[in-house]
Length: 287
Ligand SMILES: [Zn+2]
Image 1 (tube, rainbow, N blue to C red):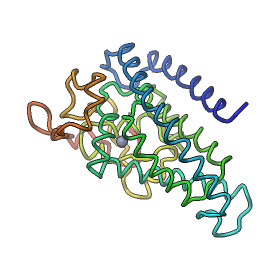
Image 2: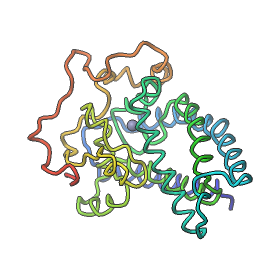
Image 3: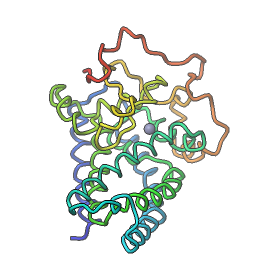
């Protein structure tokens, strides 16, 4: 079976499994939208998929070929056994995605597009692919630089891609895992509670937990924030929190329109966190 077929089957199966589980054991309650939300997200994701297939994939494939032919990239600087080189490339891929995600929040033109992903008030597995096609197209430039600078090989790239897609589904899902199990998993993976805090309407919480597969990069860069209980999180972007902000054409045109003051509610006032609601240790996941 070709690599892309393996990735699609695993990702498709996991998507369905998480979709069922999040209805049986939801992590955050109060989400009324079920089928319409999933349909909207799938429809919107179709544009992102088309851009990924038509723009990102050819660009990445050409770059990997070129780097392999020239022996170009970080992982070729020191001679290493192949498994070690693969592991190093995997970690470099994940670390650079951390930086890219962080840039998407901090550079205004990138945030215009990434905001569309964060506007979803019903964070769940179907949010995983709901990226604006403009964000996906812009990411092609980053991905060319990323795979070339690292010098990642095709096999490691395919393994990373699978881990990236699978964990993106997992950490966006609204599945309630037993807290002890999630704390254990969170030592090596970004988990739903951790990423849920990243989708909070409180600005400092949105500006934390950028990691994608392994959670260590947030710890390393002091952007880790795990001590917010999920029951206290309002999901979304305050200025875009009305139901009409979450419709197909509204989302389509959102990055190209005059931007609102993201962190102010329509009636004015920012969403703030009462410090008493937080747990004492930012590195310990709360219920
Ligand atoms: Zn984000």
